[in-house]
Image 1 (tube, one colour):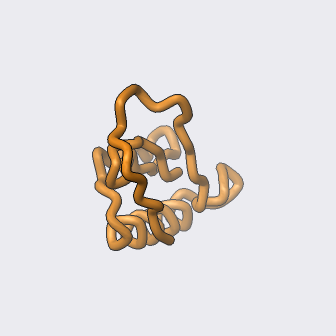
Image 2 (cartoon, rainbow, N blue to C red):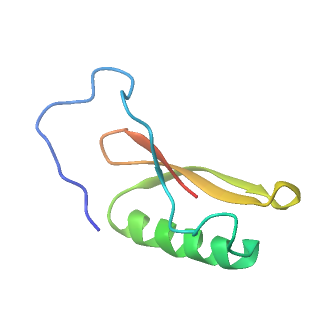
Image 3 (cartoon, helix red, strand yellow):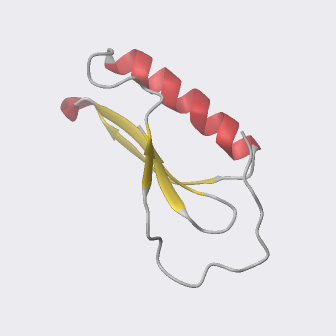
Length: 78
């Protein structure tokens, strides 16, 4: 994975907010989804992304990460 650099700076709020779903959805056990999300987050950090916050709510069956690309665009990994 990599991020495409563009010459223009970010000037407004994101028009789109992506949710990338490597976890596989609620049919996949939470521990497996968590491992998949963590692995994807690690790859994206190596590619230049930043982790904004981790959403770890086992009681709700959720593990996700809010992230930001190098230009400030936010997206979630779930």
